[in-house]
Length: 305
Image (cartoon, rainbow, N blue to C red; front, side, top):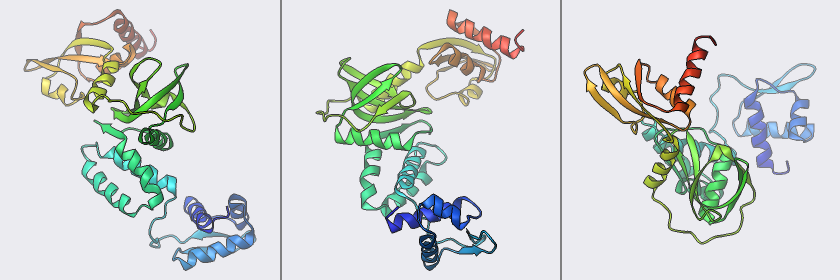
């Protein structure tokens, strides 16, 4: 680790992850000499970090507990990951405003070398409805490919794909790559958690006229709506409306009942969605696949009987 700044940051990170480290452990982890470790400890103290020496045969170092720390230090990947997390949280009803102001403050102090990565992430990603998990490294890579108009190659459900990426979109708890697939001559959406991406990016391409964000979300919703059911629920419409996503239609029947048009990306997922209504219901419109999924759940809840 020849870069002194990177070495100091790595040493500080190690000291923050455990109550104490021996000198030998730091030498091994940092791949430097014991003399370099002692030198870097002195540099951290000069910068205001309260690093204490631990007496004893083995010796060691620790950060003093209960002491105010100097300003937070982040490496490049950590800074970009935080920016992604804040960008995602802006779609959350409770955290959106705070996340947005925090993201603005973070971007103001980011080094110039990171601003391009974060700007690409912001320009070519879009959050919808609620926040969800994402691999920051993959998200930044795909956002960069969208920005630079470079093809992306990846494995997807046993097939090899090479597409022209346009935007990364979050719908529900999943992230999707919206891209034009030349082999299929059409726009497609790919779940990030099902992609095995090859790096680096492929050849450049001329951007095409892309579908609107609303059309993208509707297209992804169509996948979720592949399986449908209509159920009469023994609960007031207002109560059920508060439990389901805004896109799920809920019809008022009377003061104590409502009708729900439920969807799911699989029969099992649809059956679980119905159970999450947390109310008694009667299936009015179904399918053989959903009936089988409900029977399976019923047997499991009865202990396999």
